Length: 439
Image 1 (spheres, rainbow, N blue to C red):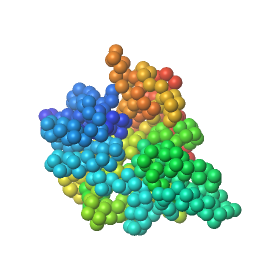
Image 2: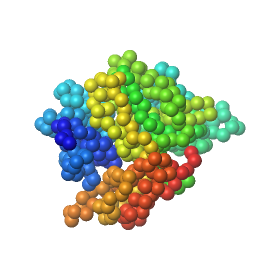
Image 3: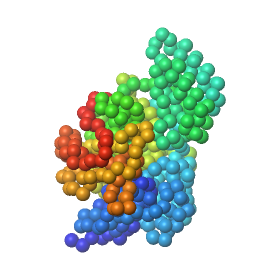
Image 4: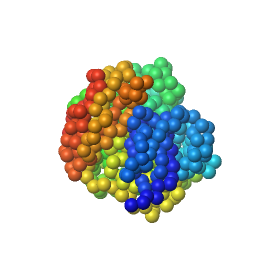
């Protein structure tokens, strides 16, 4: 059957999220070629009967002038931004000023992720449920607040979350069980500046308890459509133990999020953000990621991100059958006319990491098992590179995401782990309890 492939797409970024987005976009019959800047060892392939070709572009994700020039020279029909840094730097504004279609929020709308204090104030203003908080730019004032908070709650257990206000690569959130821990965390952020300029302001939040879940919605500036809820596992070791990471795995559907709760999230969290942003004169077009806590008192928003999550994107991409059309509808303002096409069933993602992650870790280890075909599984490269001899090697802490689909979650997990057992690099680490740990 003849295809109608003609559009060229540019995906900005080089991780597992960007591989997943490129893979899903390439499966649209409207897409002729996907470029990934800068990409990784997995984000290039030849065209097939089911997918457009993909190739890497040696441009950094933060080189905004070069990215715009490439998009213009190659008549890119849609640019999709993966990471948060280009959004914060205003890449969408730059592309829009040049008349180039791009999927993502403007610099002003991206403040929801760039500044936690902005996000908290915005939620408070628009009645979006979130934990109580205070914001500080002065260390002594923040320290006094922590100590006073400890006196107020005594003898009850003490718990706060100290957050660097700005972008800190997902590492600027410190959960504290005692006043001493909180003061230490505050000192490290505001005085020692372990997160750099991101710690010039801090947000101190009430610590709340419950099950975490992520819900992402796509928006055209007035309408928002919630995607299936995803639960990820942040801790490095099984049983949800050890240090927090960028994510060791994820899965959907989530047992404790039914269609009714998803609708509630859409109406009480996502749509109020879109309406509030429009009222400010900064319409929100792109993905709105809501990190949620399901507490005994109801849902609470932990954070907003302004792009697809990672590894959540690797979990959703295999299920969204019309990603290109969906993103185009957002950019064109026609989301109300779109029917989101979802593959029925479940998807699970297992992340394979280098030894030592999320601390220091080696790179350059050869990876085997990538040339095999795994039924119902897609391998998304995250931290990989091509060595001089043509061997694919490790190049970051999170190396690969193994995503499997199935009629049920146990079936999807079985497909994932069957593939994981055939992949190897030196001292490869992963968790065998993804989707099986009660949270």
